[in-house]
Length: 170
Image (cartoon, rainbow, N blue to C red; front, top):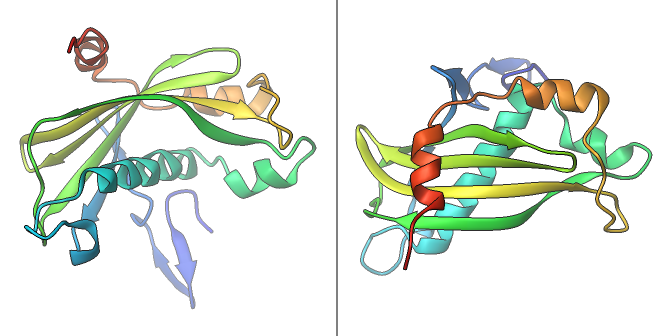
């Protein structure tokens, strides 16, 4: 496997995991029938799946293997601790959306990310996501060493958009 893509049957797909552009990880996702409700609009829970793919592939682009984390010492893994989502506009079947991911805050055992989903220049959905590193038995683990250095290199932009989302009121 390469840092930014996968190899299948000898063919390299360099952008399969997305790419870093202007301080953001960008992952294109095509909308299929399975992602929509009966009206052809994306079902709200599908956006959560798209964002999970964005977070996972950002780690892949940063050369962080979730499989290796799970197989080493404490059987570590990232879990979502908190998520705030702002739905603005729907995506539709056959659209190609971009899942954009940026790191906002790196703490001892967690990282907070701002994620947004766009079609062309149209903002659809935004989310503030805090993920925590935990051991296989559920204990929080400090993000240290090489993993911290790799996460510290995560793309950082859209901080103002994240602040606006954090201050959003009902």
